[in-house]
Every structure is written in structure tokens, then in C-alpha cells.
Amino acid sequence: MTGFAVEPGSFRDPASSVFYLDGRVLRGFDQTGWADFEALAATGFYQRATEHGELVKTTPVELATLPPAAQEKGFAGVVEHERVPVVSYPFEWTFSMLRAAALVHLDLLLQGLADGFTMKDGYAYNLQFRGARPVFIDVGSFTRVQPGEPWAGYRQFCQTMLYPLLLQAHRGVRFQPFLRGSLQGISPQDARGLLRGASGKAGVLKHVVLHQAMDARMSGARASDTRKELQAAGFSAELQVATVKAIRKLVAKLAWKDAGPGKESTWSNYQQTSTYSEAERERKQAFVERALGGAATLVLAAIGFALAVGRYDVGGRGRGAPPSRQQPSGHGRGAFSRHGLRWRSTPARPRRAAGACGRAVRPLRARRRLPARR
Image 1 (tube, rainbow, N blue to C red):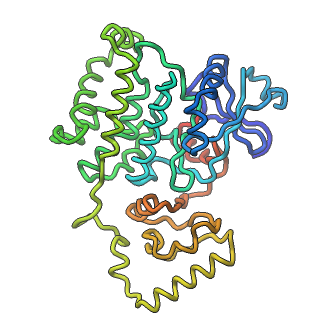
Image 2 (image 1 turned 90 degrees about the vertical axis):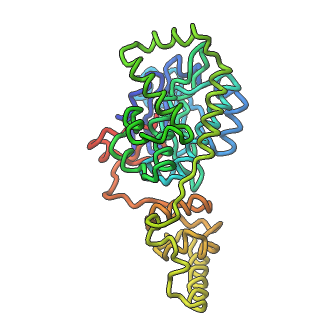
Image 3 (image 1 turned 60 degrees about the vertical axis):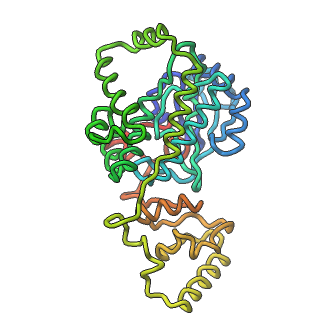
């Protein structure tokens, strides 16, 4: 993308918005947002998270270097984000990927709370994957903690991360169709119906049943009234930290038992059911190593599920080869994530325009109003 263009989907947060300049991904802040970002950038956790790759690399940009079209927006400050090379969506992720993203989100929130910062939201779309590691891309989500206020993103986190994980862990039902059908995730009402009879399972009573009951009770209340009630009840920053720690402990323990009758994919037992002899396996291994050794930019072709379980991945690691265009099954993508390999979904149609942090989704957003990575 060349020239200056505002991201049309970046409208949800009035304090910051994403725009593009000659292929670069930038974010402009108003006065409040810029003050929050400057305070955030001065914290120790921000520096550590950026260095460790949990938070997208972000650098300030001199306003005077921007073209007139950008300067006319009246931004108080502008930053540039490092582009994410391959963009994926939560409804494309496996259970292990969504859980890893949720844990990074909660870890960053806990680190932020220790330095006086919280998050405005808890949206799964605020994370992407660089290789097999989640990275949080919405630095505009961080804001300074206000005394007596809860985590504003709790509901979004439940709907787009916790409920999908609970559904698959406790019911064995894949969450991807639910996230694909609703960009806001699974509502507390729907989650309670889907998990009916499972209130004894970890996390269901507190985060689904009670959440839905409170949601119904407060449905007609204004957000300001809810905050006042929580303040009057003595809600504190310490209680917010304890709540987030408890959610993190719950998420870390969730597991999807993807083995057993009726749960295997075509490739689950590939190593046991394939007809390769040992000599044929060795020839295939040698071919992969020769091919990767001779072309650093080689795009891997489909070489069977053996790649996902690590049988033929020795030559690929460390040689700079980009991820495969072949999309493995849900079990296969999960194995990619668990083994530290990279995967890339093959889009159903060409994506014509880049979005925030490198995503290219305008045709899909035109159909379904995909939210922007703010």
C-alpha cells in the first residue's frame, strides 16, 4: 500500500486510530491516548514485554515527518508498529493457540497492573502470532488504572477467549464455528446454554452461570452506575489482580482431550498408519533436507502430517524458510503450535488490502465488518 490511508475499521477507540503510510503501519493518539502511551512506554514491563516479543515493537514518529493529510488529523502523537508478516484470526486458531494467546493477554495485564496500568478491552483480535508465539498488537488498549474500577475487558475476554476454551475443554465442541459466526464471541447467555449441566466443571459456575445472572440483572443499568456500585462495594486494584490471577490459573489448566474414538483426524496416526518403509522414510528425510538446504526462500509443499509431528522438520528450522501454504487439520495445526513450528492458512480468496500490523482483510470486512487491530 502506498500513500496515506486511514484504516476504516479503526473506529472503536476514540483515543487512537490506525493508518497507513507507504506500506508502514502507524497509530495516531489524541491527547489522552498519547499521555497514556508515554506513561506506558516508561514502565519496566513495557520494555520487557517488547524485548521478549509479547508486545508488538512500537517506535514514536516525529509529527513533522508526516504528510499534510496525516498532520491534519490533529494527532497529539504518532507511533509506528512493526508489521506482523502473516495474519490469522481467532476462528482459524487451534485450542492450544487460543489458550496461548489468552495466557499472554493475561500475563501482560498482570504485569501492567503491577505498574499501574490496565486494559480497556479483552479482545482476542488484539493478538496475532509471530511464528508459533502470540504477540499483543494493540498498545492503545493500555490505560492507567482508575481507583475502584474493575477490568473493563473481562466480558470481551470471556466471550472471545475463555468461553470458547471452556466449550472445547468441557464439551469437546470446536469453538471455531462460533467465533466465525459472531465476531463478538459467545455471549454469557449462549455460553450458559451450551454448558448447561456442566456447572461443576472448572470455571463454569463463576464465569458462565454467575456472569450470565449478573449480566441479566444489570442489563438495563448504565456503565457509570455499575462502576459506582463496584466502588461502593469496595472493589480495589488488589481485587482486580486476584481476579486476573485466578482466571490465568483456570486457563492454564484447561485442556482439550483430542484423543479417543471419534476425535482423531485423518492425520492423527499418520506415523503409525502410513505405508512407508524405513528406507522410504529415510529417502524422504534426505530429500527434505537437500531441498531446504539449497533454497532459503523455499515455500514448503505438502509433505504429509509427518511435518507437523516433527518427523521431517529438522531441515526447516533455522534455515529461513517461510511457513507452508498447506493448511493441516485442526489436530495438525495444534501440533505445529505445540512443537514451535509455523503454519499459515490458505485464504479462500485473494486478500487485496493490508490492514493493521500487516493484515489484509478488506474484502472480508466488507462482508462482515471485521474489527480493526486498533
